[in-house]
Length: 577
Ligand SMILES: Nc1ncnc2c1ncn2[C@@H]1O[C@H](COP(=O)(O)OP(=O)(O)OP(=O)(O)O)[C@@H](O)[C@H]1O
Image (tube, rainbow, N blue to C red; front, side):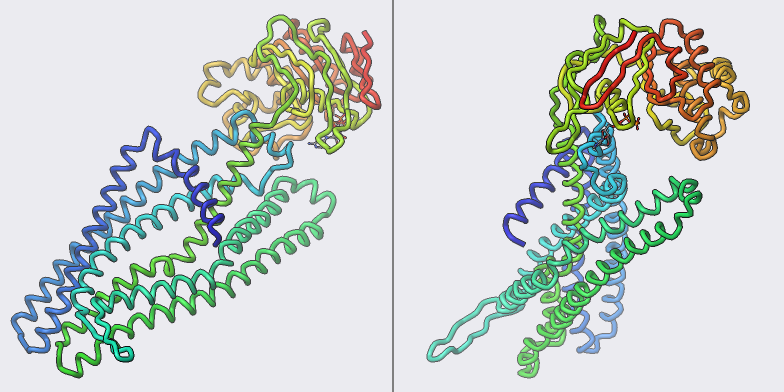
């Protein structure tokens, strides 16, 4: 990995991690982390005790001291019991910290995705990166879990390294190496050897394994694409069934799945080489200290306890120095998760920074409408959809927007709603609670029918705002009497109700919400002309002061509106009163 890459990951990590560790929860988080680190320190201390115990135990065995044998078995049992208790609580507290951090981070990401309609702008800008839902649900969890385990692991290995380097240094003794006519004295030669061994191992591991970082990143993306394809089928079952689209859908699944498998095979190949290398590296580390100690043993300079203690200490030092080798796969995963979350952050920031020359007055109490507005397409040439349009919506009780398909009717409404950034001019809107937009496709959230009708009012305040009697009366007025007894039934209502019924539910929202302005984008297109006309009449009766701005193709609606705005080719428009 180049130093630029390392800097990138560190920078991205800083941005991802700092928030929580500077948040209002930081002291609790630091507290738990400190306890986890202390427990790890204690556990390293116990491994040092075990290292001493090794020497004592093997010496006792060699000397056939039966009484000391049982004493040492008891000592080991006590150390092991404390070690287990520390291990259990260390993992438990680490998980506690993980869940708290994840909770905080998920909350922030969800808010960021929703705030200022970032989710919409991302799509508009074509920056709808693969599956933001997965980034929020899975990647955050992985990021938190991997960061904690890598950090705590690193600290633990550092403590181990310090403790056992001292032990190994003292145990190694001094050796003299004759080179030519000179004799070199080396202190703590075992420590130097384990250092060289670990540096070579770390370098080779990185060489072998670095491709895994990219492959893991791609794997998550391909898995998400595969899942997304199936999710789309689930959402559009009926259309696909009518078209008998099983074959292309299946083909699409299999193509995406093939990519998932292909990439996973590459991961397997890389992982196999890496595993072979790390396993060989680990095995060699067992035999090396024994080989080095053998001459002293055969020269009868040391006892078996010394050999056991040295080989254990060498293992600990080399293990700690080889932290990077052992954690390589995890680090590769961590890098790809950081990249994905960083990508999410950057795209959301770009979406939120999306500049527009449109001036929107969001709480205008003088004017409502648009003034000298140009609307463009988001292409390179910035093709004009609507040119220099001015409409005073206060002037009309009802206005019908008409024009050929694709001329820009819905985009004009998007501009009015502040959703379309590719426009310039002035937009004047009343306060948020005074207007309501009904888009072309009715949207019914998951939940009870009451929630579906009251959308976007949040669940907790629905019963405060709207009584059951009122909702039922409105349902009957919208010819949905069959639903009055089902207000509390929780289901996927967009699957159960016909398109016409869904449009009537959306219409019922107007009567509940009682806005001063309502914008209907072909919101009654699935209804027959009589029912559509009746609903418009009812709207005028129930809410006589509400101004209506509709988009429709049907000429039967012309008589229900006071004026007509006709959008024409090349951005032209005209109003007929
Ligand atoms: N996100 C987008 N990116 C690129 N082009 C877009 C986008 N949204 C809309 N358009 C284009 O803008 C033009 C106007 O679209 P719009 O939906 O406003 O048409 P419309 O008049 O409402 O059509 P219809 O009557 O068929 O609903 C179309 O050519 C459409 O392809």
